[in-house]
Structures are given as C-alpha cells and as structure tokens.
Amino acid sequence: MGEHRWFTFDVVATDSATHARAGVLHTPHGDIPTPIFMPVGTKATVKGILPGQLGELGAKIILANAYHLSQRPGADLVAEMGGLHDFMRWHGPILTDSGGFQVFSHGDFTKLTDDGVTFRTVDYDGSYVHWTPEDNMEIAQRLGADIVMQLDQCPGYPAPRPLVERAVELSGMWAERCFRSHDRTDQALFGIVQGGMHLDLRLRSLRHLEECGNFPGYGIGGYSVGEDHQTMFETLAPLVSEHMPQGKPRYLMGVGNPTTLVHGVACGVDMFDCVLPTRTARMGTAFSSEGRLNLKNARFAHDRGPLDDACTCPVCMGGYTRAYLHHLVRQREMLGPILLSLHNLYYLLDLMRRAREAIISGRYGAFVSTWEGLPAAQDW
Image (cartoon, rainbow, N blue to C red; front, side, top):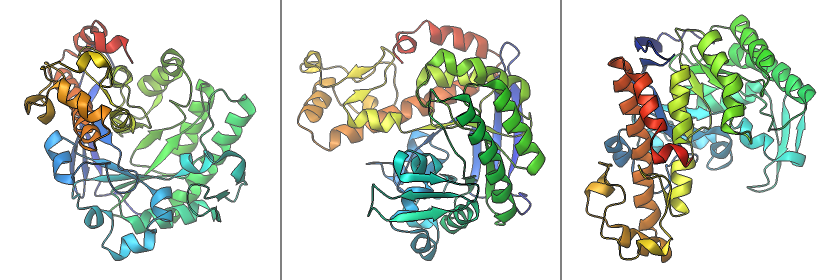
C-alpha cells in the first residue's frame, strides 16, 4: 500500500470519566469530526435521500458497498463515470465496505479457501464469482472511495471457537495481501479486527494487523451479528479502551442502535455505521426521545404534534404532524419512509454531535448517565 499522506487523525479532546475521545479524521474530500455516525448508501444512494439533504442533516461521510456495486452497475462503469463521488453526486468523504459480510451471508453458496472466496450471486443473476483479496482491492480502487476496508471473514453468533479462530487466521492473511496490493495513495485502507466474543482472539487479530502493515485506521467487525448488548461489550470495551492504538480511528462496523453508540463512544470508538435508521424508517418506525415510535399505530391518527418535541430535524421543525406521518405510512406513500429516514438519520447524527460537544467540554460521563435515564435508552 502507498503512503497515506492524505489521511491523518488528530485526537482533540479526551474525557476523564470515560475512554471517549473527540477527533478529526482528515481525508482528500474533507475533514470528519469524530465521534461520527455514517449513513449507509449501499448501492451508491442513501435510499430516498438527496445528497444535498444528507449534508444539511449533518452527514460528514457516507458508505457504499463494494459487493453490490461490483454486481450492478460494475466497478468499471463507476470508474468510467469518474468514480463514486461524481457518480452519486456526493462530494464529501465516502467509505466502501469490502462486501465480505454480504458474500458470507450467502451461506451454502459460499466456498472458502486460503486463496479467496467463491460465491454465488443469489441476489443478482445467480452466477458464480471468485474473489481473491487482490480482486477485492482492485474493485475498491476502481470505485474510488476515500476509505476502503480489507476483505475479511465475518462469522455469525453464536459460532464454535474453531470457526472464529479460522476467521481470524484467514482475515489476517487476507489483510496482508490487501495491504500489499493496495497502492492508491489518495485512498486509505483499514484493517479489520475479528475474533467474535473471544478477547484473546481479538487481540491476536489486532497484533497480526499491526505486524503486517501500517494501516491508517481499524474496523472492528464481527459484532452486532446476533449477540445481545451486554455480550458485545464484555469484549468490545477492553479491546477498544485498553488495546487499540491511540492515534488511529476505530470504526465499529454495522452498529446503529442509539444506546450502543453512546456506550461505544464511552469505550473510545470513533466511527459507526448501520442501515438501522433508514431500514426502520421504511418499516414505519422512528427514533425519538420517548423511545421507539411505530407510526402504524392507531394512537397517532389524530395526533397534531411533531414526531419528537425534542428534535430539531427538518421533519420535526417543518410542521409535519404525527397524524400526517401515520397516514403516509398506513397508505404506503413513498413520502412516509423518506420523512422518517430524514428524521432517523438526523437523530443519530445529532446524537453524535452532542456526544462530541460533551467530550470536548469534559462532561461525557454525565452525558452517558443522563442518556441512561431517558426512555429512548430503554427501548433499543
């Protein structure tokens, strides 16, 4: 991998009562204040949301997925169109996942070797595809995101320890090969720490990554795959707060539960992503200071109030009533999920903005205590 001179990470404040820190990740397409939530635009779009609206909500970086884009429209076409930034008209930072999680979710249609993975594209044309780590890096470099992730194996939960050990071994070998084959200097390659719920395996994975190359940041994979909140933090908390490098960003992959974000920041996590805010919006569900709201519920039919009195998003400030949102959701009008997506994305972006302010002012411990007393904290 080439030198990542474009990518530096500054820790600007730490909280004395927790392990939380506020930072700035510098990229070619702009600075990212951390902690940060990253909206997911799997197929080069955050469903139903214009790129300009994402910026207005406070998004600083968004995600896309290498597996899905490699299938449709293809990495070569995206490159022909000038790369992801031009293609999707988002000119802030972009992160692409390797697609490994999607590949391994194909289950029986996946065959694994040291060389790479063969899988059947069951959600597209059903053809068989073979990826080596080198192939995956070629796709990532063609897509052109600012941050890309190594190809890794992510076992579900629960999983037998030998299977998790094998995933750690394989992910480590693939990390070396990704690092050697990645040479785009305006793009940062993050390694991914695996190891399931076994702290010793997590530390083995981290040590291997530190030995095989100078990654500018680390993803933390293999969580939020079926385990409960408490089980996750038994290993996540010591891994992040005691063992991960201080001077590099830490990205907890696939987590969007508001309470998990608050506790993750307290451990020292810097970056989060999840489809939860937009997926739940398409199901008619909203985050709120009162907890989870199901807008299909008949109790909202005559409610003149905003979605959330405590929220300053464009939906809550724009005069849209719960009654109207209930109507849209019940009638399956496309505007319903769009408005709920705007609100839910703002909710998590604003939560991380307020968390950052609390860290900088030295009161994140109090921020966590206050959060734990809210109805919203009990509902996720």
